[in-house]
Image (cartoon, rainbow, N blue to C red; front, side, top):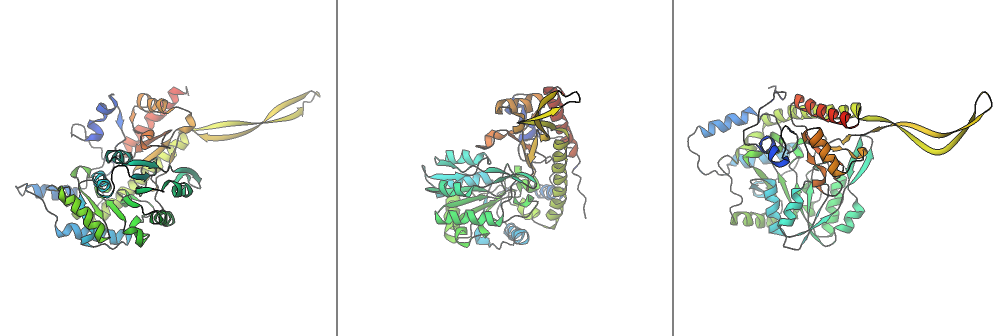
Length: 428
């Protein structure tokens, strides 16, 4: 069994990567530690880069095509991991999931149609709805207290109201930025409501292979709704190869599949470049499973580290006065009154623990800062480049998204900078 080294720090500066080379341009500041865009600072597995080098060494960079292995590897991966049986004629290719969502909206909706999303959610959903000239309908998630802390839940009564008149829904399964893995019961409720209202579902399942508690493809929970659903999936987040531009889509209904495939073919939107079909063909294998298992263990370790660090360093003692008076008498008979007080603790910076992926939604709401003040604190004081929670829509205020797909030393540096900024701001 190979042992992969996720502690190795890679110098990505000057490699034309968005995460490290665009941070200063986007934030307008130097010396920020980039912990934002969702790619990892782990080396792309060598068994893939070796295959890539071998292919380039062939000497001709001609047009690429979809090999049979591309289909076979995806079909086997879905069956093995999710017990989802799909066939070759249900599969398709797009160079990226946001690209796929953009095309799906243009293929299956028209300007003015209503499209529902669950904010706070991956912000390109809202962008693509606007670009397609559709009307965005929000069904905000609610934060509930669970035995494991805070978590996002769907307000199904609100969903039943909001879904009326909608043509489509974009589902994030698992959820980004909250990391929520939707249960079978929840997905069944969503499917029932969509079926009753004839709503087309675009299911973004790019983070599903990174689930810590299992994943259920939306299209598997209701056979009727599956006929009105397109699922998007990719190896890019899982195996840190987003730059290659390779994603797949599944539509189990023939008419639906043929309509989308014809639309894509009409603009050659489903044409991959020379190396587009390599990631799925190579990663969806025993080697891929081995690397992913070790990567997941390492990511979980980073999540555990952040969770403990926040509890250890940002928990304060609180005194809550009830307003009730307590009367006592001193030894010399003098009566005194005291306000009844309850001593407790409050975690000033906490997190929603992700059930999938390497993204953590940090909760700063107990600091009582405005969103501008929060962003200034994180960027100007802690010198961290994190995603502003407000960019994910309603319910994202008071949050920042942190990427923990990095070596532990990077994680320790980030938390150290956050603690130093907190101590300086509150004079601790």
